[in-house]
Length: 403
Ligand code: GLA
Image (cartoon, rainbow, N blue to C red; front, side):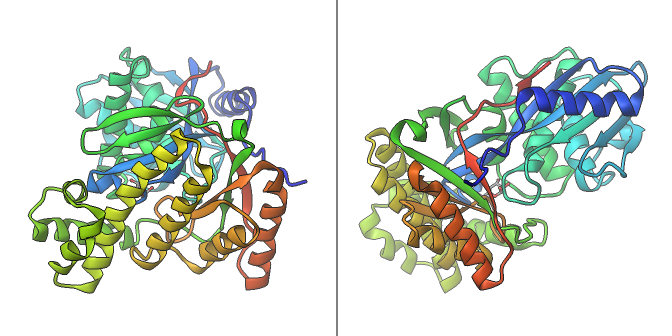
């Protein structure tokens, strides 16, 4: 039997963050906050085009034990780079001043202060079971957990209602764009803060509106497997930004604010006519992905609601083909896993997240999960790619105070 239950329990996460805090600073924290990583079920590279995405929050969370200080100092430590603690003043938490994990942890403090929240000096200890570099939003989990902690310790809690959560998610996006320097959209932070337990989040990125779609695969004898391909995933090398730039260029040529407008205004039967107005093949392929993926999210949600899971699976596989062939964000390691899952009987499978490595998901019948997981591992071995790390994805709760 494969061990797919890889997330820490809440008690374990709280204990790990608290122990790290106490061992580092010699006193107890004021509280512990946590926020999850995510799997995007469908709607990839759509957020920055104003379309729809459908993520779930994972049971894998980043835990932050935090305590308010009376001065303007900030100290931060993590369990994943324990030899690199960070120490400085509140004013050092700003664009250009932070690298690596410290940019994700310090960025939200900067963004909150920019928004007028008077964040005090802080001691933070961060412990995480969100796989890093796996396309499961370990960075957004850090941002959102620190954001929740810092806001509450500034006496301006932002986790208590949907409007505050939307505001905090937007501040964390700003932090990621301006402090960490990653030109990402809002999918990951919305998934970490705006989801509901047991539900997928239908995020309309143009209206910044959300709808909660029941997502309990086990009630239907199904499960969603995640396989981390362990192929290095980094969005900072320019490929992500290049995809985004192509979309912006195409939107300008089409005379729209975002490609979502084109998706809404186009009947799928007219797709080729719209594409024919674009001057380059690469733009035509990028736009074809964005339009068809936007339509697929809507079809997928309808299929879920009507419990047509075979069709939902086919839409996942069509999304993968589009990301592989038109958007060109898949790599050999992820293609091998998707092909193996499908050959072994998955209803559907696709790369998830930003791409260029990272994880794939597979929608499978629960009684075939073991066999399909093993088929993915065997295919990786046969192709000389890394052994995948498998997880079970269930729709878990959003970020919140834990202790
Ligand atoms: C990364 C980004 C998100 C989104 C996805 C692709 O996860 O952080 O904003 O664009 O890629 O869907």
